[in-house]
Length: 200
Image (cartoon, rainbow, N blue to C red; front, top):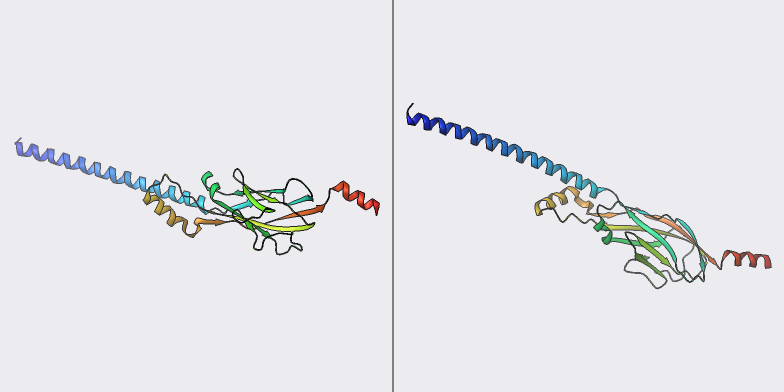
């Protein structure tokens, strides 16, 4: 066999092996892109989930003269990561249906950054606490809600972050529905009230 023929055969073999390598590489890249796209879609679905504000104590009683302020715990549900808990904002205002308004309640309600000495919101461990030092008796209905700027994963590359933002769209800020809670403020304790009724 001539040398030229041997070289030609070797050349053909090399070309075939190169084509196999290129094909396998393309198939691997296609598989990687498919996995990447699925991951982005799944991540985006998590960030598109609604956020809820849980208030377990929807009705409570407070006695004027108590040394401690009244406390209502509010917990956000539906956060996509533990880091998002640091970026949740909370808002409380008098419900439109409330017949009464507590003395000293600020116009426009309160938030983490706009409370008063008597009414404020404090952040807890993954939640928030409404603190109310009521000075007038009555039944007060409140509405509360929370909102959070979605915190995207820091481990993603710039390209993947861009893809995730496009997939999430306008839902990068999540706002919960308004939740109601009622506080009945009494003048004195239950025993004192009973004694005053008997004396009359």
